[in-house]
Image 1 (cartoon, rainbow, N blue to C red):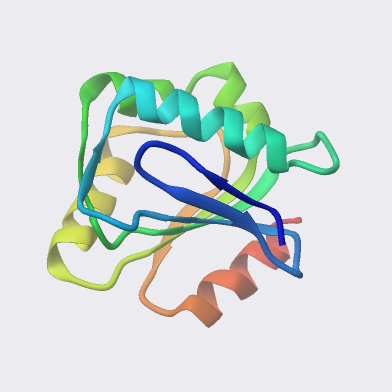
Image 2 (cartoon, rainbow, N blue to C red):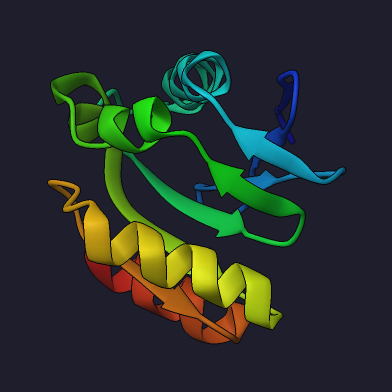
Length: 126
């Protein structure tokens, strides 16, 4: 399994060719960390057609305005086929709802409480 560590996250590609993003410590996404995320996703993209991304929202406690704005840019749109966010507590649910309400990424994105449901949804997007 290929693994890439950024300053606030660990990204890996699993056997279903889904890229998993985990935050090992409490963190906020900034423009810098979003750029690192984009580079890592592109490095893990074997097909150069965008990845299916599974984001474990635990430990993500916020996002700067600049990082939220970056989600809708052309490079991010090209890098992602679809994104499933796993929310496990009230804070991550709030961040995911806020993110989905304010930002309209140009790729399918949805939040889930179950990893199995998130993976099944991602696989349908490919």
